[in-house]
Length: 391
Image 1 (cartoon, rainbow, N blue to C red):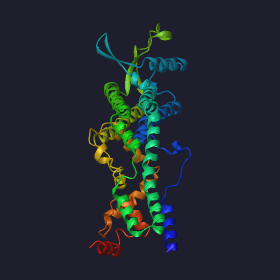
Image 2: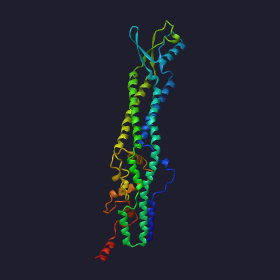
Image 3: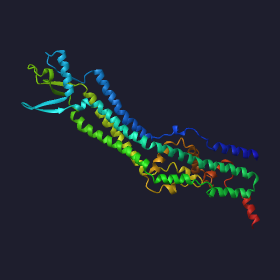
């Protein structure tokens, strides 16, 4: 019998959680997977396009080419290209002596507008880093340790029950075991009150909503910029440029306007279309991140409902889900690898759903007694013995 007790104690010792007292902050994920994807695309994609625009300019030389008169010298042709690129204004003659101008400056400002877009998309990320991450990291560390603690206490309770079983009266032992299943041996008022306090707090959820709102705002501003400025010059490949300025002001043998061609128009069109496509795909993801806060994520803490005296769902999740507690639950799901007891309890919950035995296996104490080789209920010979003593 001692060998069986020793084997049961070894099995329960293996079920205990390892003591992890290291720098656990390094392992925490303080950014949700979808938010990380949105950040890399929203910030990295404009930088990629900006590098493409600069690479095209450095490899091809001037982004435009003017058709100068044949009698122009090389110096005069270079001056015309430089002057027309600096002004970048299309002159269209409506009537004799009257010209209508249209600026083509979005071609010149393309790399810098992409840089400004990347900086703007980076602002919501920095807001989340400095406004929410310090408080969120401390909240996650405290709640993770608080969720792991009751599981360890439940396992140690069964270990203690095995020890007292050896030298105690069998009737008293089973009475104590039934009492352990029903009564609230382990109270965790600090954790429960802390979660209730987070349900009434809105600092984290405000920072999270502000981050996503800023992303939607800057995306809308990008659409307005592309629609108002890029669309107007999207198909403008050639333009007329006045050249009687500066060194050529007094020249009478040259025309007033010459035709110039934008050699970088294809890059301009690719950048515009790809920006619209990518940010259109990001908008539903950002809206989905908003909508996740409109309902409770009960999948994580529902696992812990099987622990003795740990009723979080019934008493902490009855109000509006837009609060800090719901944000913390989202980050707990992202850090489920740091929640060591979650995998053990998930297995026990799966056993609870698939077991064919009609035993009372509602708490982790019941499962641990089965794991230790104890009977799920008081043996019949002890029950009959009590009936014989009390006819």
